[in-house]
Amino acid sequence: MPKVNLSHLEAALLFALFTSIALGIVTKKTDAERIHYGLYCFGAFIATLFGLAWLMKLGHG
Image (cartoon, rainbow, N blue to C red):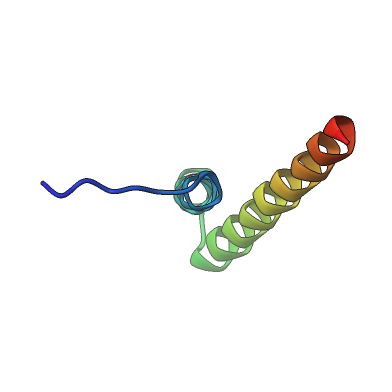
């Protein structure tokens, strides 16, 4: 099996994508609700990711 080298950003994006898909599937009943909630969760993960990155950047100077 080939080794996969991902940067921290790529790994975080993949985590956000797969977690959002799973949350959308298991928490909502209709397809429209699943898609909407999955996109909402993905956006929240990305916003949190970049927000925390800026906080760490500001904290380290």
